[in-house]
Image (cartoon, rainbow, N blue to C red):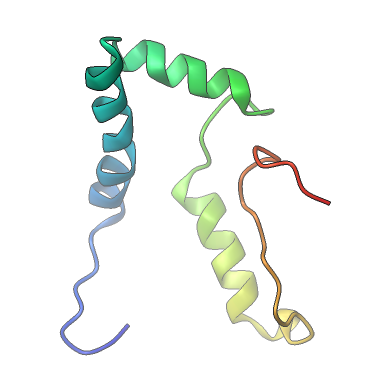
Length: 84
């Protein structure tokens, strides 16, 4: 993190990341619950990832255990985006 950069608390980050559902619901004249349910239907585990799950990947990439990982894209999306 650079000087002067502020980090949002995880609860604020979570609210910010979920705001897309509110905007989509308004745009499509649906309830937020329906938009969330439709989204969950497309995700194999039928839920969104938790901040802790994303943080685990960041912790791994920041550790010595990932020293041989270079130039990779690591998806943390429960196979939501098909890839090889």
